Image (cartoon, rainbow, N blue to C red; front, top):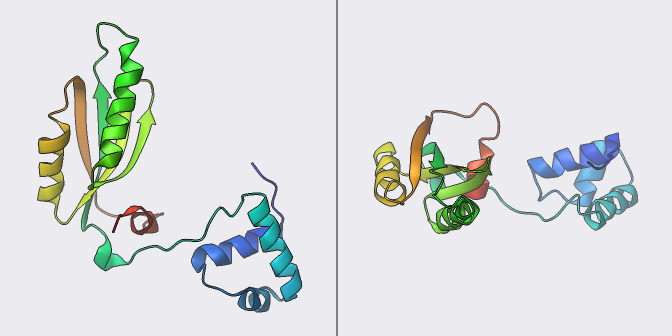
Length: 160
């Protein structure tokens, strides 16, 4: 993990809150010269510590219901096929519109964040699109009632 000093962390915190801040505004908030802030941001970008600037979509564009999905694939007769099958599941899920996030979990598991306008639509999506995939041993869906941290991730992940 990269070493950051207090000024770098302060700059990153401000940009995470609002990437639209100008160098002048950041300099003013941190009580530092604009040239220092400009230099530090440039260095953070060169080191790929700032990869890009983006937006987080607002509530009106986010799904109203979310669920974490856990899938465990049955080990096939020829175990060498498990890796290819899990890769296929991950690729398939990543292309589906209601799937906001997909990650591998162990050698035979997949975790996904599913979103839709209602919980019924989330459940139907899982039943009609995911539970029908062959070779799955377990498909569990866990509703997300609220986030304690990271609620903005949904606004970042959702496609438009």
